[in-house]
Length: 412
Ligand SMILES: Nc1ccn([C@@H]2O[C@H](COP(=O)(O)OP(=O)(O)OP(=O)(O)O)[C@@H](O)[C@H]2O)c(=O)n1
Ligand SMILES: O=C(CO)[C@H](O)[C@H](O)COP(=O)(O)O
Image: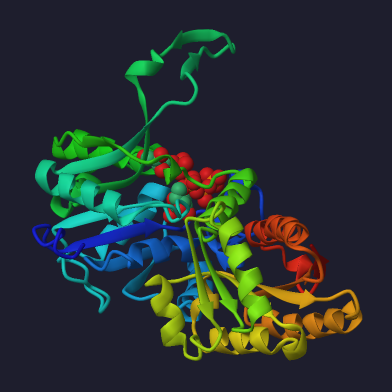
């Protein structure tokens, strides 16, 4: 991707994050609300860090949130971030963010002026690198560019007495979304010239570029996930989108004993129908995290670990130990379904206390361990049916990532 961005020149992003989230109605401003255990803004930052061609990430926060933001940057290891104090309105916050690049910026936080600057609300966590590059390149070519989406509802105007005045033809209008990008001089010049009324009541950066720099923005239809977290339900939706995206890959770690391989094979066949990628690896293979990472050429958040009767929890414990040596669980909660192959005469009581103890420890490092018993003392057809039921349980556990079920032992 860096190659594709080579003609772009220096590029930076300003993320306004200085609002109080009144419409969401929480005491915590929405950019700091947790989504799958991590502040929303940290998810947005991660999306921008993936684009290594974006050299500077300017986060604009209210003065009272500076310490909190510093702590988030430190905890999640965010890179390339500069913090700037926000203003009374979104436009004023963005203007403050843009000022760090200006020649007149006197203090020691001045940063090299970018050719292209992206502006993106900190509360829109789902933006992919391809689209960012498309918007940035378009801005370089046309001076300004912004994401649009088709309108969901028709826009109407009401008169002061609350009656319909007129309505807009929906097919001819679009919703303006983020990201937007600008040649830096185009947008900075516009902010320098605009009125206090614009800064206090305006909601559209593309409009400022048109009105004050005479630049017509190129409009690009973006993917559907660009929406802004505004109401409480948007936090739930954001969590679902993230859960969905980290539940596409699955790694089955099996013991090499015959019965484990047999159940591992059946699980693999069933789970293939539910996941984009399922890979099986023998536990002896994944003694180092290097092996594990190579399996997916990236991050995998979901594991099934098959333990045979006489080894009890050894395989799961090894996997937990291995995952704890990585940073993987800092970003997202990892799931391990600890599968235990049992026979009619084995007792599940020991298993229950074992899985609870192990899960409690693992939970401290954001690894969610759930137990699943599979009785292998049955004929082939029955076993296939049991594995099928086990697959449904595994799929539900991975999809929900429910901390309340950590350490529970389920029976297929
Ligand atoms: N003074 C402000 C107001 C808003 N924003 C940021 O602008 C983005 C989009 O604004 P909006 O969704 O309106 O956020 P809030 O102003 O926080 O929400 P509300 O309008 O419901 O209070 C958010 O990332 C928000 O933090 C900002 O940087 N400075
Ligand atoms: O949609 C947008 C594109 O310009 C802005 O994100 C929106 O205008 C922000 O406004 P508000 O802070 O009032 O929600």
